[in-house]
Length: 102
Image 1: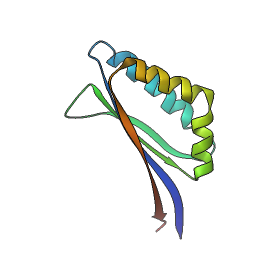
Image 2: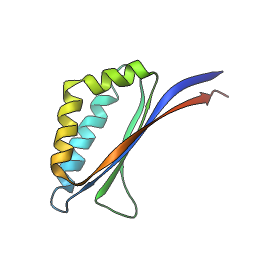
Image 3: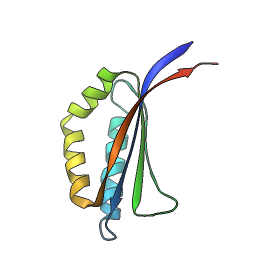
Image 4: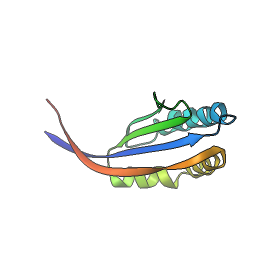
């Protein structure tokens, strides 16, 4: 059985004096997002080659679920705060994918 989903990848680089706050707000966002309808997974990690760079990986069941996530007030507040803390605002990409249940 093949199931469609969206994969979102993103990254942002902190300033040396903002990485702790950036990680804090990122983890709050990840934990909140995981509770949203249609969220399959939502993660943040530190780049092994650059400890100031955070990597985001999300999987969503549908475009509607992702649009709803982006429309959540807390998501918009999070993104604005992340940009305030960033040395490099990074970016985000969205991919359509399918998974095969074995």
